[in-house]
Length: 253
Image (cartoon, rainbow, N blue to C red):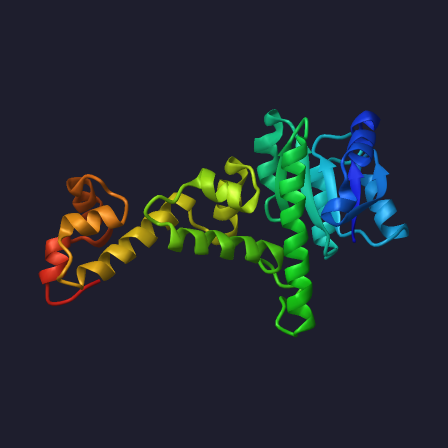
């Protein structure tokens, strides 16, 4: 079982989350509740080990973002999931690098909690297995651990599904809010998701152009362009050459 701390200034919300969702069925147990970030820090310092914090963003005394920052700065290997409304999403973007791994909209739906925490459990188990084999991430190194596993899964998805890759589909795959995933990917890789998809398509197109058995319109369709003119325009914008120039030229980019 992994230990979960629920943090929200609304007692009703805390009780509902704690009592009515079958945490044990997805591998978690609620080890405490706090009504603000400061109280959460005290419980973490004094109480049982905490693996995950599910926290509201806007709270008195100490917000969820300030809590995430404190945990990050003190190198606490505790993952954070935000729970808040649409109006707080932009505010939440500030904390993407504080080991915040997801953002759940209020009111939290049963299937969303099931998906998100099922995925988190898989990541925790994968990290533990890797560390036990001395192949795991350095806990103090930024950008590793569960976050790197998510990025790896996203990239693998794009490489396998570049023709029809979409943000919405990959968001479902990793059980994250699509908008949040977009910012998360940019924060961790320095590249927009759409740019990564384009890069993957163009690299595949370039590889296919080296095989003269494929016609340009066939390659266009293989990488997701039903209109060959759009493909040619995009390819030239990316490589500085049309597909024909690329194929027939003395050298390739």
